[in-house]
Each structure stands twice: as structure tokens, then as C-alpha cells.
Image (cartoon, rainbow, N blue to C red; front, side, top):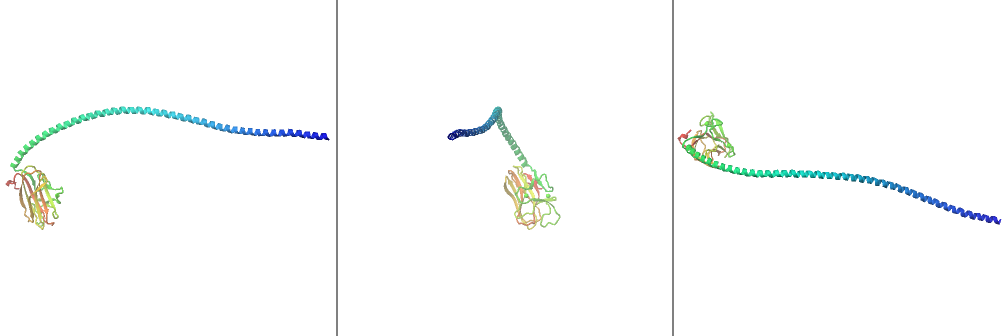
Length: 321
Ligand SMILES: [Ca+2]
Ligand SMILES: [Ca+2]
């Protein structure tokens, strides 16, 4: 019995040691395997990351290569453009130089031409002065001869009978420059009884009378500028037609804008025509004007003119119409 107990104890002891050691080892192995598996997984993850990184590196290298190629291409293009522009700038310099030379030559020619032109103008001016002096002398000589000749004989300068609208030898016309308010009107003789208007001409069928005027309105019949330095004789017929109006008729000698009244008459007359003859001294830029003025503001009665004659020389019997 005692042996059996010891044996059992021995078995228990041996089994307890052997089985305890084996369990511990198994746990260690499992732990190691787990660690190995973890490491393996980690390595796989790292491998995956490495592959991705490697792929990105390769992609970036490709991109860098492409960019470098582009850079090289652009660098080449820039170089080509530089060379091309350089050539064009050089050509422009050459062209500009040529144009500058042409311009200089043109300026030189112009200066030369201008000098020649000015010289020619001066020479022509001098010749013109000489010719003008000669012409002046000739004109003076002719003028003196002509004046003497004209003043020694009577010539008709102007004849205004008003029988036609246009009279070739009549130098008088209505002023249209604004010096007056109204016009003289060509009028046909009437067979009516003359009451308030003129009805018959002095001679022929037509005469001139003033338009209906307002108070102090006037009408000017003006001659052309007459020959200078010539004595003149003016003769005319006038009529203040009977009526309530009162009128002034002036004859003015205008010399270069200076007016000198050489005859004036006014009042109310009858149907009668009056005759007047005036000597006019030689003056420069002479114009003769008939100025009719209404001083009563009635639309009745008019001033009439007919047979205005202008002769050279002093008034004498030969100037009667
Ligand atoms: Ca007449
Ligand atoms: Ca007028």
C-alpha cells in the first residue's frame, strides 16, 4: 500500500512537471506566430506603400521629363524667335538708315529748292515791281492824256430812260447792301387821272418811283463806281406826286465812303416834272446816289425819277437831254 501511494505521488509529480512545461511552450509559440503574422501583415502594408510610392516616383519622373522636354522646346522657340527678331531688327535698322539717308537728301533738295524758289520769287517780285512801275508810268501818262482828252470833250457816261428792264448804258441800280429800307420801282405810265400817284413818265412809257415807304424809310438808287479824275455833269427829271405825303429827295456824291449831299429838295409838288443839272467834281471811287426819304408816313404820293443822264465834262448846253 505504501508503495502504491509513493508511485502515485511520483506519477503525479512527473506528469505535473512535464505537462506544465509543454503548455508554456505552446503559448510562446502561438504568441510568436501571432507576432510573425503581424509583422508579415505590416511588411505587406509597407510593400504596398512602397509600390505606390515607387509608382508615384516613376510618374513624377515621367512628368519631370515631359516638363523638361517642354522647357527645352520653349527654350528653342525663344531662341529661334530671338534670332528671327534680331534679323528683323537688323533689317529695320538697314531700312531706317536708308530712309534717313533719303530724308536727308530730300531735305537738302528742299532746302536747295526753297532757296532757289525764294530767289526766284525775289527776282520775280523785283521784275513785277519794275513792270508795275512802268505800268504806273504808262497809266499815268495815258490817264493824263485821257483826262485831258475826256475833259475837253463831252462823252455820255450813263443814260437811264427806264424804257427797258436792262439798259446797257445805265450805270444806276437799286442798292441791295442794306443802306436803305426800300427800292425804286420801274413803273409804266398810266392813262388814269393822276391823283395821289405819279401816272406819267417824263419821257417814254416808263419811269422810276419809290416803293411805299414808312416814316423816314429811304430808297437808294446808286451808280457804279465812276471813272476817277473825270469831271461829270448829272442831269435828271424828278417829280413829287401830289398827295398828303411829304418827301425829301437827295443827290449824294459818295467818294470812298464819304458822302456829300450835292442837291436836296422836299415838300409837296404837283404833277409837274422838274429838271435838274448838277456839276460833279472829280473824286476818287465816286458813286452818285439818289436818296428818297418819306417824312410824313403816308402811303400816298411818291417821288419819281426819269431820264437820268451822266456826261463827262462840266455842265453846258450840250448836256441837255
Ligand atoms: Ca422814261
Ligand atoms: Ca434798296
